[in-house]
Image (cartoon, rainbow, N blue to C red; front, top):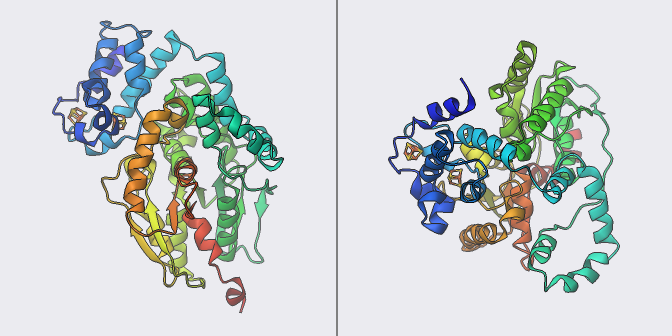
Length: 417
Ligand code: SF4
Ligand code: SF4
């Protein structure tokens, strides 16, 4: 079956009922059919039927405006595989209109060269240059927006490949750090290692792993996505880990779908399935482990709002594992955002490409969150956390991973008794 036939077969499941329209954030913002899941599927059908060409500007724009939050997929009664249809279409569009050099460069900075990018940004911030540059950017809307997205970066941390405990009796785990774990998300990674070691697990951070490939896949860059996925399969195949834990739900969602990739190779297909079997989200894993071996946590008298990222809710279809985990902390006042809360607007690199829409979506979310008194927001996806945090610059509210919050309350002296 060629790619057009594949698209048409998948898209044929859409009965055009329109139930997804009120659920789609871009349709809600624009009230334009072409900005809805049903409208985008119709455009892609026109592409596969050769009524539209892959270099069509309007087609490109409407597909590019999609957040890939997959809320439509979750509620679709016909089980339309919206993301698969989008991936096939984006691959065609990518071939017809390859990204500009600037886009390619910024994507590489965000994935392959994350460590160097991080170090450069850290220096830029700590040296005070950021403060000097800020007023100079006021007249340049896009640069000013990009500048506003830069969070307060924690100091760089060197991580080892293995973290052992005195006993290592509980088992041997690997953590998927991807391109953010050892750079931007160091506090979460450090917290995860500390908690897992306290529970008696040996923890490894396989050094050969790389970016999960989500950004590349959403841009239709199939070869690059495949290469990144293949590297990760090799990185985690060496040891027989009891589980492979991911910190960011966005990365976890991408890894979980590796078996659905077109491997054309039995060995790799098998490795992808083996990795999928071992994947677990760090919050859910810790919540279950703490039931078997409770640790002591110091009480916390604070209002904490739980943000569930689209990747956790719509793709991984996990329950609210952050709340399950944080219920370990005595005195904590937890509240979860309503089921129908839409995407925060971060959506991978969406906030870089579509500042206006991203800002509007973030504001909708913040209006909901700030309606109540809140001191801490927890989110299981680093991209969402950073984006939400940059919208709260004048407020004294922290946005962190639930694992970081739990580790801050870990009463290590009591555990040693
Ligand atoms: S994608 Fe699903 S919910 Fe949306 S119009 Fe098609 S069948 Fe209906
Ligand atoms: S993935 Fe999200 S933004 Fe895209 S069509 Fe579906 S609901 Fe709308």
